Image (cartoon, rainbow, N blue to C red; front, side, top):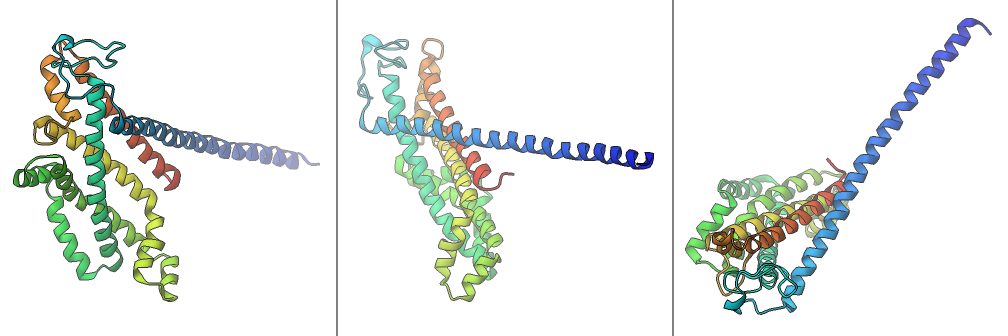
Length: 301
């Protein structure tokens, strides 16, 4: 065999080794990315289940009456009798955190049902049909979206008054534009897909195309946006309750607990730490779950 052939074989071998090394590196990067996505989904799901489990527990059982005042134990540090301590009125902080988180969950869930339900319907119709209906509804949507959702909710509350259900309705209305725009974009992307065209050709009804054929195909993006909306509703409800225009006494609220405890940060920091920590963990769990859903089922980013 000539030297040229041997050299060519060596070069070919070297080139193949170099080339074969690249896919291994890419595979490692892909595996690392897949592991991170799986971590987001798993950790977020576990944390969300734990937090929701505690909230549901608070609907049926709390260790102490949330409004029972005991002057003899006010501002007691966390102990076996009161694991989160007591506040300035001697009320059990753990019981009030569970009760307040229940109010937050109810408002955030109602906000998603109202804003998400109406927003999905508007987005589906405008994104699928387009034309003058799309132009008209989207211009109204743009006017509402020009106002920050919390500001729009504050305007509505100033007209209707404060209270748990009024806050829920106000936030739900304020969240409609964002959900409508997200769903509209997804329906516009899917309406020209082959499976939609085939369904139209064989005479499938429009409602069935919208909600049986297209809607399941946008679920990853939709569920991710719903988790973001849920977290925004939790934050805004806590903010409004902190300002005194959200949930009203005797109903407990995490935001109101933070507001009431700011005077006692030096003598009873646990009164603010535990409600704030509960909010952070709830938002973290739901946020990571939404990110994991989009990464795992939506193809990532």
